[in-house]
Image 1 (cartoon, rainbow, N blue to C red):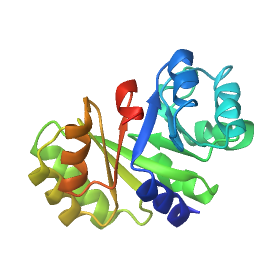
Image 2: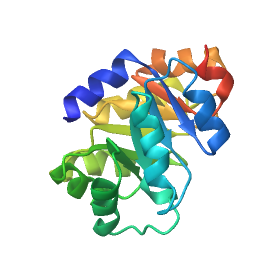
Image 3: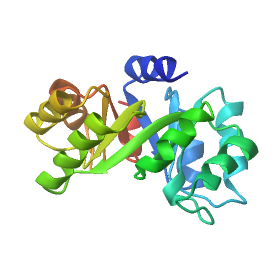
Image 4: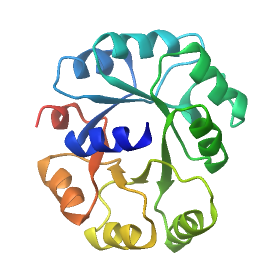
Length: 191
């Protein structure tokens, strides 16, 4: 399942990250194939996912941002059992292995604030038995040199997200070695 997801991301390098119903409705009018869900709660996320799936799109739930869910494996169970989601996004590496066991696609999100974040990516790449399908680094407007460095220390494909404002930002991320970008910027969805 994970390889097919990576191939889909590679084929469609702009991912819509939605943070409200208005954004969801708009992204479903675009040619976007993959939607990152960054809002909702345990009562609303099944319907949000259903709307995306009914439109024939891939739905990835940012489990850390869904109200009522915790950083425990039971939250991954909930997403797997009570939604039609294709996978999860999280900053918690402990949830990745459980999600993979359940057959979900996975994105592990890192905030690149300092050199310690790079050390954490390298440690995760070397020591964790189960790797995520993708790494998402934020902010997505990091220098190409940093993206290349992350690509060198990890075998996991990279997505850049956060602060992507225009086509130039998209191209910089892709030229640096990212396979895709995710953005809430609606203008970029239609580039």
